[in-house]
Image (cartoon, rainbow, N blue to C red; front, side, top):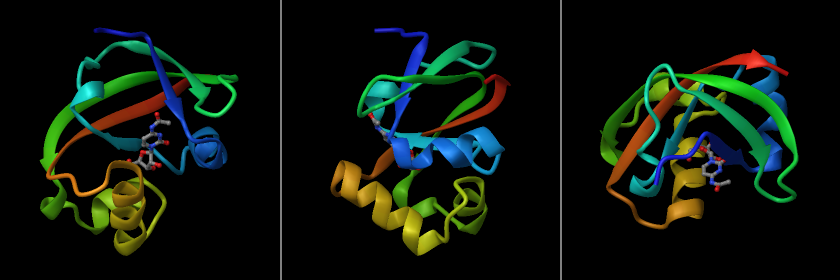
Length: 105
Ligand SMILES: CC(=O)Nc1ccn([C@@H]2O[C@H](CO)[C@@H](O)[C@H]2O)c(=O)n1
């Protein structure tokens, strides 16, 4: 189902608000976002709104194709990024890279 909302773990809030994190990698259940869509952003833990973003693109990417550029866009190293994804999703092959920029904080 389409949604104008997305949640992030609270620990990523600072990086999103500073502009250091400009992508998120999600599974198929969140592949419905569209370029040009405005999305309200809240914390996963307490559902607290903290900004609005505009979706710039949504692209399918394989876990094995992740590289240091993706990591940089997450403000992480590549090993850290692979670790975070595996913690959240377990062993996952197909991801969706959602690129965004801040529009309101
Ligand atoms: C809260 C919720 O429902 N799900 C997720 C799923 C992912 N992410 C972040 O996306 C990147 C790659 O997966 C990393 O930065 C993750 O931490 C997140 O913050 N919240």
